[in-house]
Image (cartoon, rainbow, N blue to C red; front, top):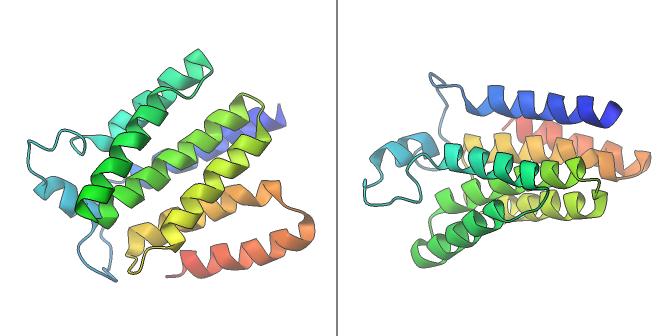
Length: 167
């Protein structure tokens, strides 16, 4: 029951956070990803409605109790990032890793969940220039990762979450 409530709370928070359509952000390093997506060529079918693609892949994988659709999207995002070098692909891959972590928790695999969320955190932390959206997703993922550490380490991670949330 506790795990289901945590999953529901995480999904609700993520939905509220990312579905904000009228959000205004102060840019730290370059244009927002929302504006980059709106300016992306129609031919770039990977980025077209990428958030919906990730959410649909997550739902498919939850129902099938395996990580197949998310893996396919992750591979595509990785290939596009390697070809373009754009942070936009890293951001969406990290977003995907957050949902992968939730998928693993739902399937009872805490170790795989921790690995997925830490991989997403690592990707975002390694960005040379982060914008507000990167920091917000990073803080959310760090907050999710607190469940995997001891209470001593939780305090350290909580400080990182606060720092990134304030960026």
